[in-house]
Length: 140
Image 1 (cartoon, rainbow, N blue to C red):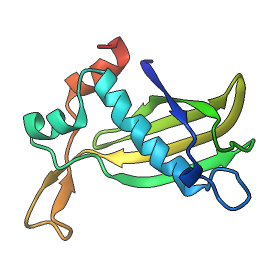
Image 2: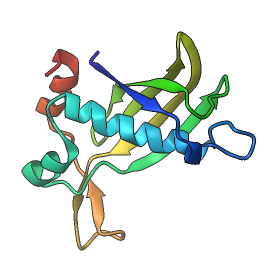
Image 3: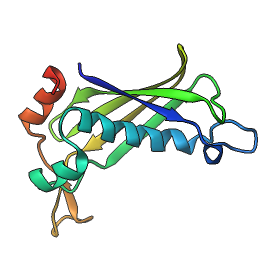
Image 4: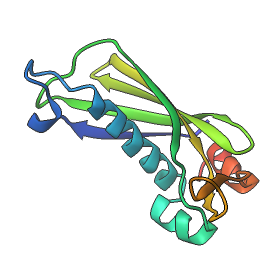
């Protein structure tokens, strides 16, 4: 399955008073990793939204497991991949490494949505196109 990795340098503002990464930043990085994954597959979000007429791919559920602390100034590698495709949603799996050490893992479930004024929240999930799924099986 297609994967993409990005390097992130931990900034002072990413850390809590104890000098380790404040946990909400992992979720920000997971979102960044999902966007980079689609871009690496040849479908940058900003283009995909316009070209495919979608409202986006909002998170429905997200979680993380933390295994080792990460500190200011350290460089981490975030690797993201699509773990599962469903009809209208998909799961993105993330791993955060520092050197060779696994420091955190995350998962988020996202929906493929379009604008719909009749829907309660103004958006509704629709079927993910097969050609999108194939991009992640075959690579770009």
